Picture 1 (cartoon, rainbow, N blue to C red):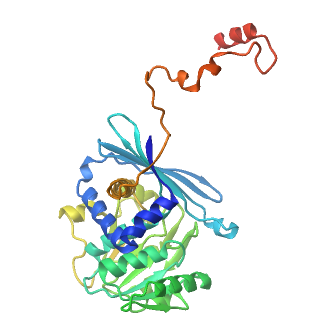
Picture 2 (picture 1 turned 180 degrees about the horizontal axis):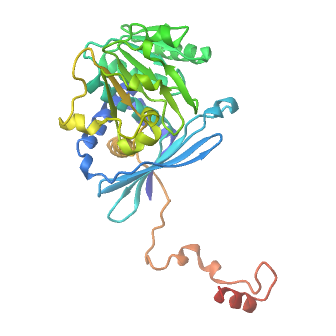
Picture 3 (picture 1 turned 90 degrees about the vertical axis):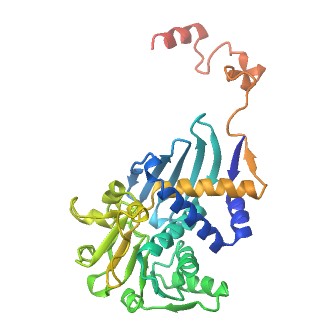
Length: 367
């Protein structure tokens, strides 16, 4: 039997903790795993692209546990009443190869993306940051706002989306949180939202080389959390922002970011820093209050590993694991066929094609 977490399961787990404590706890798990970066088997995710979107597999292992995530990105899905991003994942025991957990990761991906964004900002943004522009007010935006409010003390959110209904939805949901020290300001343009902001988060969905932020919008000391660009041909920042002499660009896993991140716009020798180097003290997240810091986030498999391991632990702590019979349990592991029952041992006199069984046996052995 394999433990299982579906939509009801993630609602129960997050509901008992609350979204903010869940995100902060997950951020701690992610930081712990990034600090042991060298233990992980790492590779860029495997992507299959189509005109409408992309389907990806994201595997990693630390030698004891293995995980993978299946995730899609189809921006036009919302017009059909479908989610842009869906995902599920597996956590497995390396020694036996047996899966331990099958879990939804659609909601969890939004939670872990927010946790990673806020974790990186703790190391990169100015400590006195209190105002954040949130450009792209779709499915991930509430999670980003909750993470930055509770983990970094952001008090004012300036919202912009080309879809005004999305901004109304986000503002309504943030007001419903009942946080008295939280101010929400819908804006008429990205430029209006960015003006005076300490942190700018871009989390748009269109699969294109968009220019959401231009160089003149960027002020000294800003931290840019570029989340929406996460596949080839999909970016949000003008390349000249990355080229600024006072800019520091930090990525999760450089080989993957070269393919999918904002830095896909730049030559291969453009210098970037991996986040693990900041945690280990090899590099700094911010050198001065005036520096412009850019977290070029595409999402990396280690973060999903952390999320799956975190869910596995929380479900066991709450002592209500649900299990599914995904893997057979056999008295004799060499007798897998016996699992199908005695009736299946009787072969038909003639195959479905109507040809004699003897003739079929000759055909098979000649292959």
